[in-house]
Amino acid sequence: MYAEFTDDLVTGNEVIDTQHKELIQKINDLLKSCENGSSKDDAAKMLNYLADYTNFHFNAEEALQESISYPGIEEHKKKHAELRATVQELHDKLAEEKGPTDAFAAMVNEKVTEWLYYHIQSFDRSVAEYKYMRNNVDRI
Image (tube, rainbow, N blue to C red; front, side):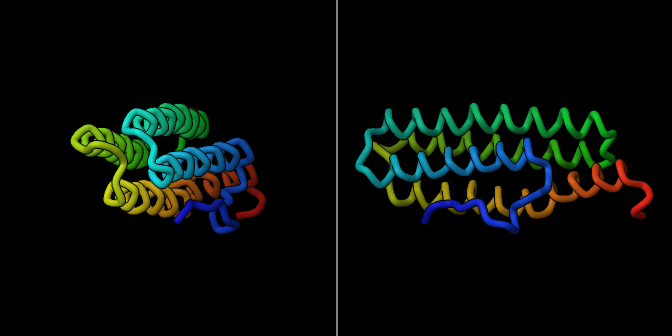
């Protein structure tokens, strides 16, 4: 199953939404490398791309939160650390195996894709709402 950017993942922040789309594409690239009988090295390369883009995206989100004095930034950073730890677990799992297995792909879906969906729909959306309300006090 591939990840998909759907309307319920839209935060309203164009930069963040574009980065979420790219993040989903990186997840799908990793999943495709698992299906195609790719080598361990190919899957590791895709996982590294995902890790690098995840760090880039999290840094952008955290900079945005700092710029608007988002009160939930510390909790948000903890959630980001969770996914970083999961990516490390995936690296470890892949290192133990001869190549990307069905169990590895299932772990990507369960621990990365599902985490990302929940994170966007709850944590990232709350940041977008805070920013919108902060910038539009007449709407409160």
